[in-house]
Length: 186
Image (cartoon, helix red, strand yellow):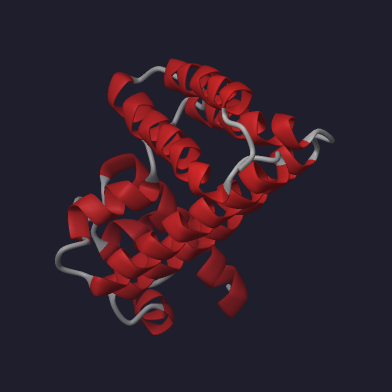
């Protein structure tokens, strides 16, 4: 197995296992078995589990934000783009393996003890906040109102994970629609 292929296999296996069972519950030997990458090669690619966790979260961030942007940006109307965030969340929450936000899950497990997990989580959340802020401003709403939409989305993510239902995305989307209708541009 060539280096790039081994790295991709290790990241995919680790991310799937971490997301399904939690980071601390998964050992490097399990990742080796699931990926088909030897333990020696695995540690050559990722000298520590912390580095592997960080790489998994960074890869997930890239995919997650690209998926969201592709979906949202397909809407021609700026207001519809804001609401499309919640439609996209509903689709994500409806996936059979949905277990909440991998960043919040990782932060909950390791944020206090692994600065790299805290750093990548904060960067992901800041990028999401910035993206939503751009959507809100483009929809003619005040920049300071963007925090409400971000909190609706973040709350929906946590509530959907805890409840096991995709419905929080719809509820948050309805609240966002009310905000869009009632918030005048400043």
